[in-house]
Image (cartoon, helix red, strand yellow):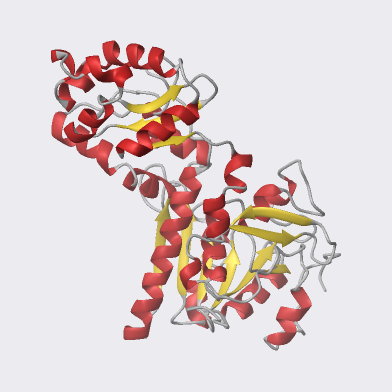
Length: 396
């Protein structure tokens, strides 16, 4: 069994909520020993985000904290800070996502940790980054989606700006942090030196909008909200069939010609308003109502089968219940079943690892109960004489 490419790497995880825990979970999936620091008797705030609840954890905690060990530690106290520094001396990577300046006030910033571990890779994740005029503003996923411009592009053309259903600003920040840490570990192999990483959720989300940013750069104007449509192609969006919604994508003249081979759409092929992709996009206000009316006459299965035969991309809009049971995900082992609390017999199915090709192949560790590994970790590192948790009832 593979121990994973990060076997032997130890990560001290001082993160909570979502972007930080996602980044360290990725490292844990790849075999790193991730030690999660949590406030005694309180823990990561997402333990209280719910319902539903399982033991002392809500769905956000369960979804982003597998393959970690929990140590209860109060960094507000001198004893807690001393223990944090002692732990850091044994770690390759330190990750935190407090508001900029907080860790320096705790005397646990990069310069402080370098004194006990000179080659440490120290990663700070924040909403807006450590520099710039917005650096110290409070930042949650919703704020970043709004500031980034993404919300202005999301929603129906005549509706209000909308956030994405998934916390994609947090996800962009978490992925950016994990990628940066992996790069820094590779660099350290060559140079022997650590590095400070300043990761901004805003930077990560803006980077994901390269196409829209290029439209602004080329035309001077941002694309308008177009619901499920595409600013550069039509028909490329969702359509309501007789029983459910599907999506189709007609992206070039070849696929338009194939689309019009269906008898129901054949009359559109010679229409001068739709002979090129730019014309179809410009005249979508006339094209789409007619196409919508035709789709509504048949069930989704009829259209999906017809488009499959023509080689036109088309798929149903699945519910989350459908996709979690979908043969494609099951066939790729992209769902996980974890037990929480560990040993309880309570099984929870959740999303799996898109990086499973480089993940450790051993059993997945369920998210840890608060403070479950405090004494274990301190003993393992020869630090059991240090005050672990300032009275945490779960410090074991």
